[in-house]
Length: 79
Image 1 (cartoon, rainbow, N blue to C red):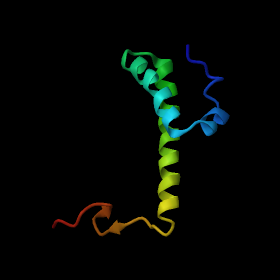
Image 2: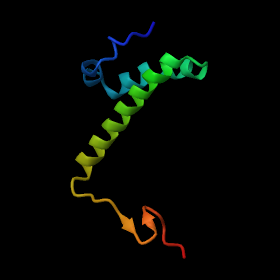
Image 3: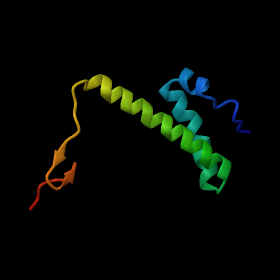
């Protein structure tokens, strides 16, 4: 059974990326079957995953800046 206590902020900070992925998979399977509680927990896992990826990117690219083009953010110039 999935408990909210287990998935606290402290818990998310204490686990590795591999543990995050392995704990996420059973939630993903339950959410595919329509379990709303699993879907809400899956959102927490996804937010944590994105946060970790962003931190890793910022660490690897400390001087990166968003790119803006005349047609909008990150859009190609194919006029």
